[in-house]
Image 1 (tube, rainbow, N blue to C red):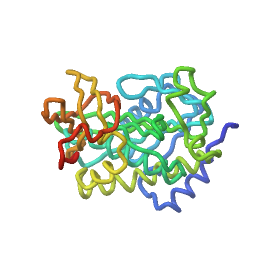
Image 2 (cartoon, helix red, strand yellow):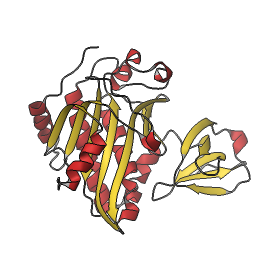
Image 3 (cartoon, helix red, strand yellow):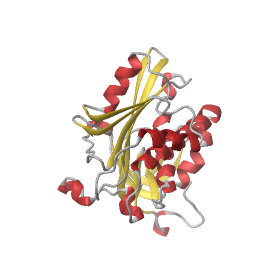
Image 4 (cartoon, rainbow, N blue to C red):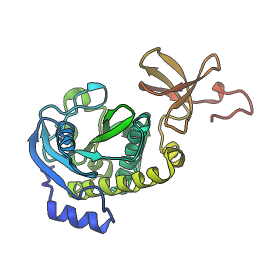
Length: 281
C-alpha cells in the first residue's frame, strides 16, 4: 500500500461539508516532529485557539498512554493533536479522554471499520486488535483548566509489515478492516467532525449523556477482566459510572469503582458467573 499524502484544501472542503466549524480551523502540518502533543502544548501556551490541530507524518518521540511509544508509519497513519479549551473545571478534564475514544470509534465505523469497539479506558479496537490510541494531557492552575491537548493515533492504511514484529498480531488498521485503502484526508476530516459532534454534546449535557453509547460500543463490559494499576483486581466488568469509572465485581461479590489502570480481557461472562435470575449491570 503506497503512502497517501494529506491534502489541506480537500481537508478544509470536507470539514465544511461535514459541518465542522470549530476543530481544524487552524491546522499545522509537519513532515517530521518530536511529538504532536508537545507541539500542541507549545502552541497552546502561546495562545493557540480552541480547535487548533497539529498533524505529523512522522514523530521522533511519539508517545501513548502511560509513556508507551506510539509508532506512526509515514504516509499510512494519522498522528494528530488537538488543542481544546473547554469550559470545565480541571477535575472533570479526564472525561474528555472518554469523549475522544467514543468519537474515534464512531469515526472508524463511519470509515467502514464496522467492528470498531472501545476497550476501557480509551483504546479503540477492532476484532480484538488495536486500531487507535489516545492520550489526553491537561494544563491547569489550581482548579482552573488552562487547556487540554488531545493526542490521537489512528492506523489508517497501515499493513502488518509496517509494524514492529511484536505488534503485528496486536494491531490493525482501517484499511485492513475495510479490505481496501482509505483516504487519510477523509479519515482526518471524519475524526475532527466526530470529535466536534461529541464534544458539543458533552459540553451541553455532560458525560452521563454519552455513557449509554459508550457502553453499547464497549468490548470490556460483561468480560472477566484483570486490572493492573495499584492493587491488582480480577472480576467481571459490570458497568460504567457517570464519570467513566469502570465498575468491576470481584470474586467475593464486592463492587469496585476503577478510575485508572490497564485492563486485560480474560473471557466473556458465562452463566456460571451469575446466580439464576441475575444479570450484569
